[in-house]
Length: 69
Image 1 (tube, rainbow, N blue to C red):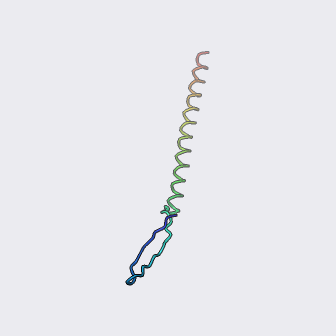
Image 2 (tube, one colour):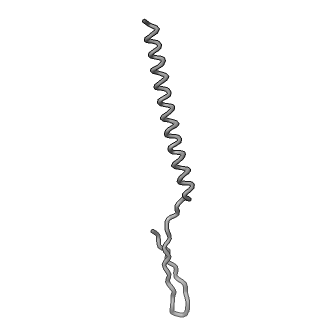
Image 3 (cartoon, rainbow, N blue to C red):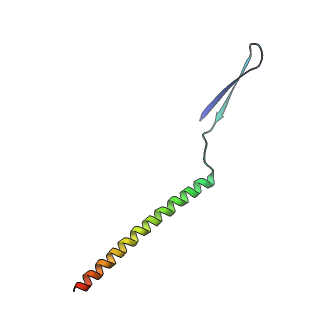
């Protein structure tokens, strides 16, 4: 939490000191939801791509082994 101190000159020898609490800037909630959605989407996209290549490799290797017999 940040604090902002401002000093205002009121009279001859009186100064008004006020302290304001400033919270750090947070992104909007919708932005956070979209970001988490895209992270999950790309994770499953990469995971599906990897599994697809593994299945294809097993299929090709299995066919090569069967055709050699």
